[in-house]
Length: 358
Image 1 (tube, helix red, strand yellow):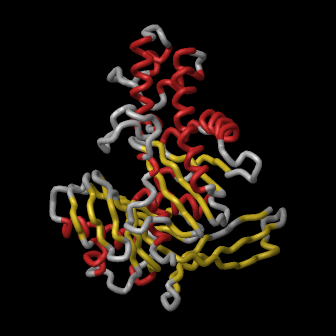
Image 2: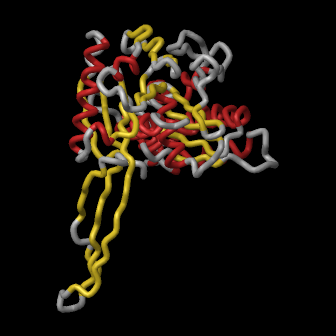
Image 3: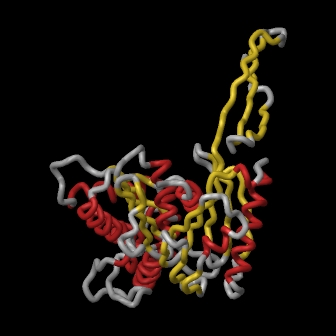
């Protein structure tokens, strides 16, 4: 019989590595130890910061990679950015201490932020939900931890990089599509985040899917986001419910009587034909966009994330089948289409590991 015994944690100050020591013991039937094996596991430790308009989430990340400690505070974005960065610095120290580290043990700090980013300058050029213009976020955070490598990435790029590290399988090319309030995307080419020459690359939610179509939040009409986001799915669900008031979808509304991203999926699984039509149409829009993304980039792997991806195979299988039917490169090796796995940890993990990526 094997027992894992005790799990020890110490710090290696000279090499800045958290070292976990475990003792594995094998007992005989009289519970006497007959074999005792000691072995060591070493992890490089990083910090990822997911900066949002509502909350600042900070995680201590090891190189397996996983988030081992996490803390957050409200962003309160109306205050000066210097105060927000001070909170970020304090949260970094907090998660490090929770994980048994000091800041001297941290290999890098990465920030994932909404908006347009100048990665080289460490500057957030514009973030509308933070009301920021030209904020030197890395120079400001460097005032607290001047000796730690740091970077700032667009939050969608950071999440994509996190999924790439975990689900990319060493691929040279990778795309992450996030279906949420909007449609976000991140692209990895030659194992590096693709930002475009001006840092604004990867806005895959805003190519035109339907000419003169539904108004998008960006001001244009017919963007993929206007048809494949969860916001769009909710709109499509509510339109179908008005046209089919007896649909089972009415039984899957939220308490306030409004639809959610799950309403049509849940009713479709219960056998409702109107809901099934909503889901089929929505997945066609999702697959249309993914087909175009694959035709342009031909990535080895593409993952679908966002809350709606928790539908798993009910979402994935129809998308895979549609893409296989309509993608241009039918007679060649095909892109692997998968469900993302990191969910809310993707941005923290991706930002953390991007902090020292070349």
